[in-house]
Image (cartoon, rainbow, N blue to C red; front, top):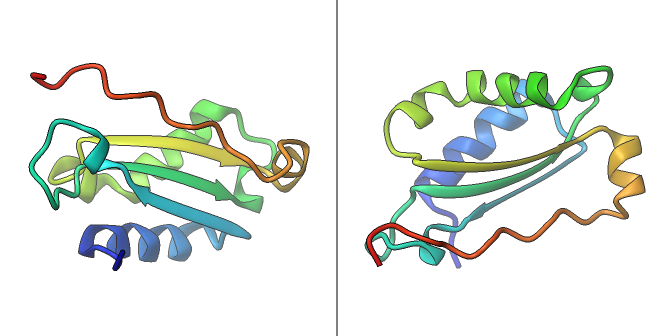
Length: 106
């Protein structure tokens, strides 16, 4: 599947802000009750040295700040899995699966 415009924007911003050692962005909009081709629900898995010494809520705030424009407009949901190198190694390079959609007017 080709990259979407919003996915490209998110990728560019996160790469520019965090210089991640690992970054995976998935458009999960198709798993939700939204029109086909939507770019509203994303999952981000990112490993960055910028997260060293920061609590999870601090990491989330950094990402929310970097993506403020997208969150204020098109992006409705953003699942964040943010790791230090050591945490990512401990997780054996795997992030949790996203839960099934439980709403949205179905």
